[in-house]
Length: 309
Length: 248
Image 1: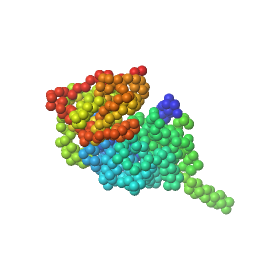
Image 2: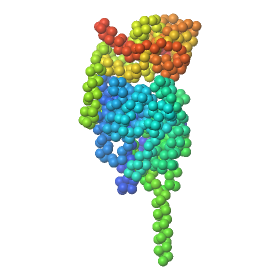
Image 3: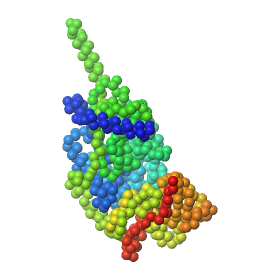
Image 4: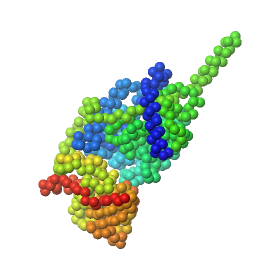
């Protein structure tokens, strides 16, 4: 798709969203269910807000501030799923001194349901991850790295299904090629496999075999590239059975989630919220009981976009 | 009786239909919530962080030097990049006690957008260069450097010291090392992070060459360099001197 076309799509989507408004009628009547997805990416050990030193992001972010925000949402919404798209580590002295201990402790405290592995999560080697993983009461998901005969063997799951209020949410992770990004000795033996083929295989399993109502991909591939490198945009276009891609790596600040037509011509949503916990992304999904026949477009959403690429 | 039958089949049909029904997302709303300076704070987290913060502060709040201006990261040339590369080149020569021609830094190796005016603390330098990448000293053929300068140009103009280059899109149009034009038949000595020396950030052309890894890392060079400036009573300053230039 051409960029101008894409922007047009996004603008139309925003306008429609604003015009229709919420709360949604069926939900108000009790016929529909609501799942609130909260997400972060590239937290980069930003435990405290950026210091007040005249920097671009001064005063923004912070775990104590994010916790207050998340708690406030949890007080109003019963079905909250808090997710992260990797690069939890590296960026402040908290990581150099404590090796990621505090990041995992605070994320566990905040009730993160799952994360994926970013390239910087390998910065203390696989042993560094193995050491701190007992502090993380949430799984690290990835479908395209093979960890056989590495310290992470058996410690990384492909996906996880969350049953919330009768809705099945399938979550899986996908990671960037580590070669060239992570020093070889820190990721020795990790085999990188095709992110798109493996994402589609995992998503098909979640949607068709495990009957998930919503399939979410935690991606650390990056939003898009000028060079030939697999991105969330590529994944979105070539994907099947994925409803939502929560991205990371490129530290891209989205004004709002973007929508793409996938390989089946169905809708897939992509979002990314910059880095360092400056933003928390939020998507509230409303679910209705519909007959299977109606499901042909997997997400018959209110927000319609121009068809095709 | 007839009515009863109709009702029976209708019920059967309804049961069958409801069996076919499943939950599907039909709508969504969205919000990107910015965590701003005025945001509410969860005190429990402040207490959880406190012991880590206090113990860290002792080391991190040490002032290494004082800067008169804010220094900013940019490509092709930046005052922050120039300062870092100048310090790395100087200290690499000290550490290895050898002649080093030039050094360069990948853009991704500079981790914060700027270094503030005023006190430059150890903590700030940790943020600027959080990685513990050691300094590698390498003997590199001029032919490989030709590749390197084109590569740095294609990346948008990586930071350097000890050399100057001009580039157009992704091709270096002129390269000077220590004031002399780059010669492809000559050997040069460079100081570079072991990450790049081993082919990181797609510098694969360096991976195959022999290298000597020093025990000091790049951050040590910055920290030691700043400390020395402070001891000499110098304020931190950096200027743009046109060492990396992009032409149309």
